[in-house]
Length: 380
Image (cartoon, rainbow, N blue to C red):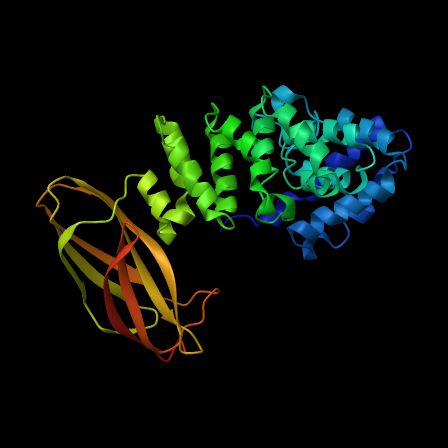
C-alpha cells in the first residue's frame, strides 16, 4: 500500500527546515519551532500539517518580512540540485514539500512587499511550486501580478514558465478560484498564446489545463482557440489542443469537434445491443455496437458512450465515457464490444429502476437502449 501523501510532511522534513532556519537566523528558537510544528503530527492531514508548519514559521521568524525573506532565500537548495532525486533529507538546502508552507506564508503575509514576495515565489517555484501562493496576489493586486507574469513567460527555467500558466488557472483544483479570470479570460490569453509551443510538455500540459478551466465558463471562446491553434499545428500542439478541449469534446461542442476533424457522422446502419437487460449493482454492463458508413469518403469518428443514471427524483443524469477513435473507410462495417462496471462508488448513489445506455458519435446521439438496475442484498 502506498505511503499516505500527508507523511511527506514528516518529522525529518520539519527538522531539516528548523536546521536551515537556525543556520541563517541566530535568534531562531529551533526547539520551540519543532515543538509547535510537530505537535500531534500523526493526527493531522496534509493541509493541516502544512498550516501548522506555516504557523510555526510565523512564530519563529522575525516580524520584519524582509528579514524573514532573506532567511528563507538563504535556506534554499541550490537551483542546479533541485532537478535531482538526491539528498532526500535536504542537507544542502530546502526544496520539495518544505516549500509549500513557506510559499503560503509569503502569500498571506507578503502582499505589502510585492517585489520581495515575487522574488521569493520565483525562487520557490523552481524548487517545488508557487501556483497556490501566487493566487493571493492575483486576488489582491491582479494587474501588478499579471505584469509580472508577462515578464516571467519567457523565463529560462521551465518551472517558472509553467507557473505563468498554472498560477493563473481560473479554477485550479485545491486552489482559490480567480473570479477576475473566470469573468475575463481574455486577460490571460496572451500568456497562453505565448506558451502554446513551449519546448516542455510540462508547460504545454498546464496551458491545456488552463484552457479546460476556461471552457467551463466560456466554451465558445475555447472552441475558437482550438480552431485557430489547429491551423498548421505541430504534433505537440495537436496533443495540447486535444487535452485542452477534452471537456468540450465530451460535451459534443460543434466547433470543438469540427476543429479536430469530427464532422457529423454519415452512417447507414447503427445497431446497439446489450447482453443483459437486467443488471445487478456490482456487475458489468456488456454491450456491442455495429456501424456501417454511407459516406463516399473516409470519416474520422470519435465514439463515446453515456450511462444515464437514475436519480432519487426519478430523473436521469448522464455520465459520458470515452470509447474509441477510428477512421472509417467508405462502405466499411465496424463492430465494437465493451464492458462497463456498474459498481458502488463514493461519488454516486445508485437507485433501482430503468437506466439508459447511449452511444454518441462526433457529438451526435446515434443509439439508446434501456436496462434495468437491481440492488442485490450486499449493495442495498
